[in-house]
View 1 (cartoon, rainbow, N blue to C red):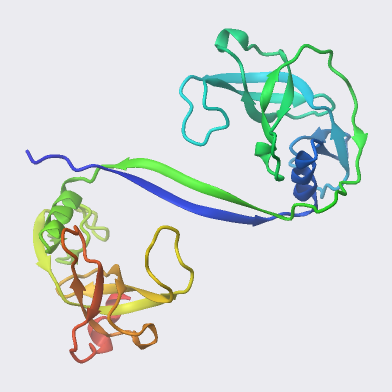
View 2 (view 1 turned 45 degrees about the vertical axis):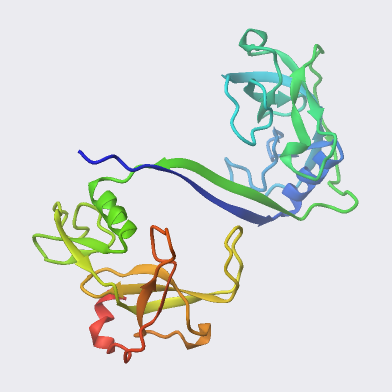
Length: 314
């Protein structure tokens, strides 16, 4: 049996969000060591605040300040913190109902061990030394013996230099293990070949293969080598430079129907000015030494393919 392929993969991108008046006031307040909630029509105080009542869908704008102390309503122990979590040492995930609030806030509790945590324990906010207007301005919660306090104080939500937008890094780390069909495809790429699989029913060749025909739903096993040349079916011009990608913008990313394939794959187009790339352009792969996949595709110099030859692959 061949070795099973696996590789660590990371999907990461910055998520940029503009803030409305409620969220802007909440995050700006954290920067100023102030916790704001929003009052609903029936008098409940929601922390964190939301812009619409989750029960009635009524628009909410009445801000109110709550205490920085509260009560743990439920918790779970994290014995092995992961990268970029709030604390590097073991901690408890907690839901804390701050004094004056009717809902609980999710954050972390700095405690020496699970035996030091219990539902109903009293805690307070430990503020981060440097605050920018983000939920991380609350560094964590810490145990704090105090009596609960009732009520909240109306707040205008007005601060100097309010936070109007945030950027959050979304990231997914995982290990990818391809199946039989994908392993064969990747192993062939390492030999500078491209293989797909033919459906025994409709006879279409799919690249990359998935081990089954997406149209007929039957298993595929017959390997078919395709390309290496192909035709640009559709494309886009990329004008925003990606992090950690050493390619100058603008550049072109295209769907390429390799000769003999019934499904277009995608790749970067090089060796031609970006504004000269077009549908029907005939291209071939360019490999760099030691690479396991083509670096980009370049024009072959052949006449453009007729539209009827690739229209079913758009």
